[in-house]
Amino acid sequence: MDTEEIQDRFVKAVQMFMDDQHQLLELDANERAIGATLAHVFMREMFPYHRVDAEYNRVGLDGSAKRLNLPLECGGDNARVFPDIVVHRRGDNQENILAVEIKLTSNKQPRHCDLIKLEAFREQLRYRVGVFLELPAGKDFGRMDAMMRWFV
Image (cartoon, rainbow, N blue to C red):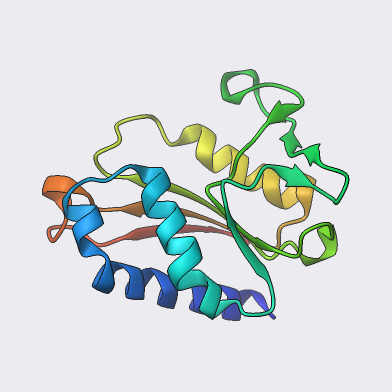
């Protein structure tokens, strides 16, 4: 699967999610609930030959924690990380397809560390594509579109 196909499949999953689950965004539900619904209901059918996991924090089959070397302000060296969504084959770093970090427009936390983590997922854990997804929530829903920033 090439980069363009990965991106196209993800965009389609997000569009289906926003059409079907808009109430989660209108109600400004928790980002974890939104990420899990996007992953398990919509992305699985777009990536049928891979696992789609939400908040997956393991590397390999030995149960090792997923860790990245990050700047100090983002967790520092050997920081445990919990990507919002990953598309991969468990236990095989050769098939790390997509890492996703999600923020809602209602979440006012800085985005800087999410972007750094996505670069690190690509460089250190060999994910082919990373995407930062910002979804309109609460009063922003219906007034803004979803925004995606790709790391390829």
